[in-house]
Image (cartoon, rainbow, N blue to C red; front, side):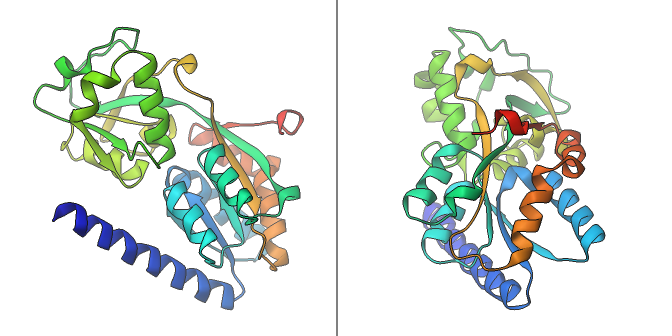
Length: 263
């Protein structure tokens, strides 16, 4: 029943997002589909762009997987920012982006969090046994089959030898911010999110950072969608790639990939 309710709610939220995007496009706004973990930084960057140019963008935040599927289904987005390469590759494989505009924009780190008042301590090293630390609680993560943070988290736990012991104790969320919320509310004693998510919520603290070698690099690509015809979308993309937006991303904890390193 709970799973069915979540699926129904997810479908309704997707429908609302699509209808909102259609209305925004009709009004001449740039429609941005962005990974949930970008919310704080991207909100600030786009607000600065609007102040500078007078142009308007409307942003729909969700899991990269959900956004990719919406674009595939014809949702009227102009710009797509994914939290991993795989979902951008997926949209590209469906001929959903303008390939020449694709670029790797940001890097992030993967962290283990707990409620701010928690005294839990964890050493993220090979042989890790999280079940002892969790007690009767569960580990909050994004969906490990679809949500980028969940996929990265599963790989990291597998690398450390901890996945088999904990896989039956995972509370899977529809996106990384939902996993963050489970920990912030004290509904889960531990969670796996991005470092930037932890910065955004003072109700949690970082227990440890996963070793970079335990999972693929967390890279955020961006591209214009194939069907975008709004010239302001290209202007916004250029702004996000430029020095003016850098401060907003770095303030939130992202590492901005320099133009010389973009592929």
